[in-house]
Image (cartoon, rainbow, N blue to C red; front, top):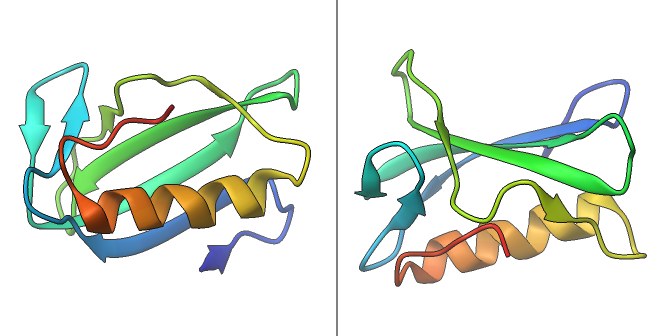
Length: 93
């Protein structure tokens, strides 16, 4: 898991499982993805964006912004990566 120095952004590359992830912008995307989880200004919710690894375009993961659980942004991002690996049109919530 990659953490930016200010601990408000986590970003990792991951292979989406069968069925990929669901985005608001283009529907389901699959394959090698980069997932970025960023605290919103209120620090209680996170914005989740995904891109095809190496591409320029970022897409909003359906369900974003999502509530950050009490155990924090790192735990939320880790859980999200697991859901992306499982696929099945994974969403932010």
